Image (cartoon, rainbow, N blue to C red; front, side, top):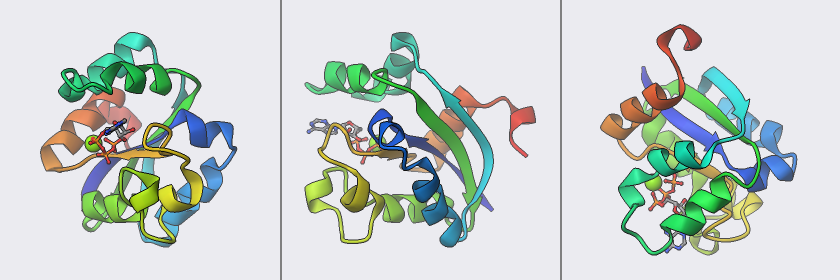
Length: 137
Ligand code: ATP
Ligand code: MG
């Protein structure tokens, strides 16, 4: 069983579609094994997206991620990392396939509803960033 980190971003939380997004994960066979709703600090968001520090969109990305509460989750299931990315759709909702979370709930490349780990190493790092082991059941 693989695990991946999912974040429902401030835009989707503000739209009150947390349950609808989680239902997509569950319907695809992924199980929520840890979950927290929280307000990220600037330090949290900056560290979480540190890989993008040199990118032109970094500052806007951090500002967006702290613009309201997020829901962070660990999803577990066979091929969870790839399955989550597939359910999310392309980074830019304009390019996201019909029926994906970003096609249905995201407005722009900045406000794109969800985050998902992109590989086994980042998944392990990102899960450890948010959840102590005792909070993953
Ligand atoms: P995420 O990491 O959030 O799951 P992703 O892996 O599809 O998304 P990344 O390339 O890791 O995309 O970029 C991280 C986030 O930075 C994106 O989700 C998006 O919100 C933002 N981003 C990426 N590229 C751009 C861009 N060209 N302009 C503005 N924002 C961008
Ligand atoms: Mg990414």
